[in-house]
Each structure stands twice: as structure tokens, then as C-alpha cells.
Image 1 (tube, rainbow, N blue to C red):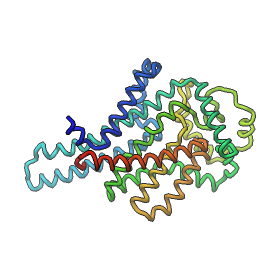
Image 2 (cartoon, rainbow, N blue to C red):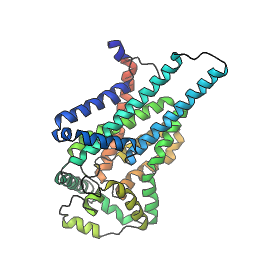
Image 3 (spheres, one colour):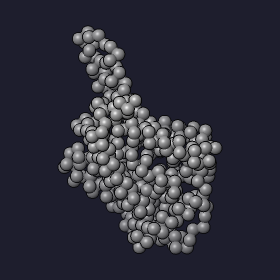
Length: 348
């Protein structure tokens, strides 16, 4: 038995065992979650399988592209064997099936755990969500001396729209591009990238549960918690008007995040996964090809500012998201060194 565990890759522990422990703990220690487990599971599976939101679209885009690439290489090898009329045994299929399982199972479990975490937030009382959102907005003021998401609107215009909004939505293109580049040209980096990418939201679970804050847009502009907005925030909102580009983006993003029935609340904004994954994309992009730093360093800064400019995050969300992204990279490096020293998995 000990030999079995020693032969497992580090992903087995970080991306299979830990999500299972977290899901089990959530069921045991959260009575509200347990009583709604059947509904939440159904919602989570649907959210996960059918591209529920922008976060999970990224994960599935990466997963499907990886499996397509793996299938392509497998079929190429199979075709070569058939061409030379070599007998195909189970031993040929087994390593490929095991390799796919070691990719799909970690991504599947972490994805399911993430969606359960996000969906379970719909059970959070509106007053707790409002209190967390107001608190984080006040942290912004204490740190920056301004309400960051509203203050940055003084720079709004064609240039700011082009830089911030495009950089923010650009994550959906940058991540898959880095993924494919690593897969083709730097497989060791690819493994590190996937591990860091999937660990990132897991680090954020405690923040999601303790401070279930929603975005400045939903909390203050749309006020979906139906609470009293203080005069200073009303004055902030009244002090600017959205550009046409901002209005288009606002409609696009809020059509998903705002629940039209009023039964659920949006996924917590604290911390920013956009900032965290932006750091990871930039780090591994530069690892892939150093000259990409010329593009990726300015982009990752604009991406984080764009998260605030679009009212999707508070300034402190970006700070914490950046820290979590760096922490995920550091944890990944540590885990792979630990694996090399104490475990003995064969490369897949």
C-alpha cells in the first residue's frame, strides 16, 4: 500500500485528495449546505459541464484542448503501429488511459469542488454578503485613500476602455495560448502551469467563505442585496457616467453574474482570480519564452487595473489575488521538489 502511494504523482494529493477532503468537510460542518446538497450538486454539475461562467470556461477550454492534443498523439502512434502491422496489446492502451485519468480526475474534482464552493455561496444570507462587501470597500479606502473602483473612473474614455477592458477580457485568450505553448514546447512548464492554475482557487476557498463579498458593480451600482447605500457611496456613483464601451461590457458581464430571480447572489469577488491567473499566465509565458515579458508584464498590470476599472473587483481584491497567484507558483515549485525527493512517479 505504501508503495502505491509513493508511486502517485503530486497531483493525486494536491488535486484529488485535498478537494475530496474539502468537499467532505463542507458537507459535515455546514448544515445548510448538507440540507441543500442534492440541489447544489445538480447546479454544480450543470455549472461545471455546461460552461457555467467565465472562470470555468477557461478551465474547460484548457481541458478539452489538452485531451484533443493527447488523443491526436495517441491516434498517430496507433496509426503507425497499424501501418507496420504490429499487434496492439492492452499494454499499449493502458499508459494512455492512465495518463488521461491522471489529467481528467484532478481537473474534474477541482472543477467540481470550485463550482460547489461558488454555488454554495448562494446560500449565504444577503446581509452577510452586504456586510462583507462594505467592509472590503472600506479596506480599499483605508489602503488607497479612495474607493478604487470608483476613483479610477476619472480616467475613463476611449484610451482607458481600450487598455483596461481589452486587457481584462484578454485573459481568456492569454491563458489558452500559454497552455498550448507549454504543451507543445515545454512540457515540464506545462505541468507546473496546470498545477498552479488549479491550486489557485483552492487557496481562495477560506476567503470565499469568510468574506463573501460581491463586486462593486453588484453591491453599489445594482444593489442586488437591497440594502441601504450610504451617502458617500451614492455620491461616488453619481460623480461619473459610463462610456458606451463600458455600458456594453456591463450588460455582457452582468447578464451572467446577476441573478434575475433574486434567489442567488454572485460569486465572491474577494480575491480576484483574474489577477491571480494573470500572474500565473505571465510567469509561465515568460518561462516559455523570455521575450514575451515585453508583452506580458504590461498586460498583467493592465489586466489587474481592468478588473477594478470594470467594477468587477475592489483594489484589495487585486492585491490579494496577485499574492495568491505568486503563492500558487511557489507552492507548485515546492510540491514538485517534494515529489522528486520523496515520491517516485513515472512521467505521464
